[in-house]
Length: 178
Image (cartoon, rainbow, N blue to C red; front, side):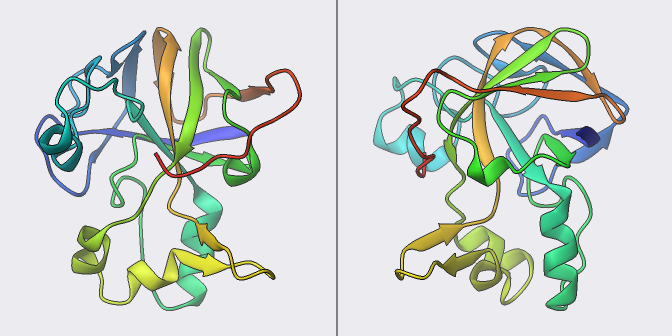
């Protein structure tokens, strides 16, 4: 389980620029990123209630999604879907709320929920919104565009860093859109 890429961008934009290293700040998010802060920074959430807690400080996507999308005809690279951390070997979507990802030497991100893809993803590449959504055997919606989390312990994260997953106590609660 490894970090494949790290990305950040200081302005509100769909994609983020790859960095050699990012610094995660406890209770805030990615230093220098537009979504860094204790309260919500996503524009739609700010419009609803600017004082609500920022449960979307860090966006993580599994690199395996890019490979799945490539088979469907899409070409994507880390950071283009707005994620801060691209992982490999971690089944992010199957982890429960409260799972902690230990990244690099000291950083810890606690998962809060699933990314809910919006129209911006469709504007980025036509057909991509449908490609990152699916249905399970019971017809339930599956969101594949990554997970969101909050920074519990500060630290630096770089491409190549290891990832260790620590599950919360049972019973586990499945990730839902946040």
